[in-house]
Image 1 (cartoon, rainbow, N blue to C red):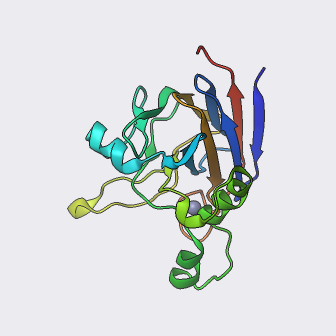
Image 2: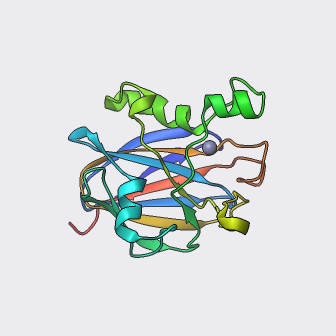
Image 3: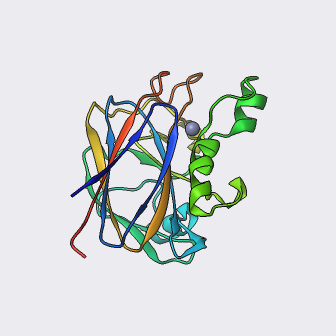
Length: 200
Ligand SMILES: [Zn+2]
């Protein structure tokens, strides 16, 4: 029996999953980036790590079949289904200061707060404990001179990714509330998450 988590556009949620569970991340309306972080449920000092995953994959992008590693180099997730194949794990989460300094919009909703706030119920005590995210459906192509850009995702309504959990995890997500520059079609929209018991 699958559990469902509804993530309103521009907001965040946290949830737990067990080793073997399958987490399906569904871009309901399309063109929406979803920031995603995770912790070892039994030891919050071990987190999903973009740096460790890049070291192992030797790739700027993640794709079907890739194993995502923890900060201790252990498998946390495997991408077992992916209908789009465009994701980012290099760009940091948008945060309060980015909107205040770069866009002069203090108090704007942001991915770091969206993920940190619901993680409080799971024992995460500070936003400094929230690791760099994996940004599913975010399109960050390499452009001229090796620079990177962030453009609107190519995802269509209903595109999805399925992660198989390799350990018990606490996860948080944010439907990125960026509505000033491209990245979410300028209108943040909802995500649906389904957590199903897997084949453990
Ligand atoms: Zn964001």
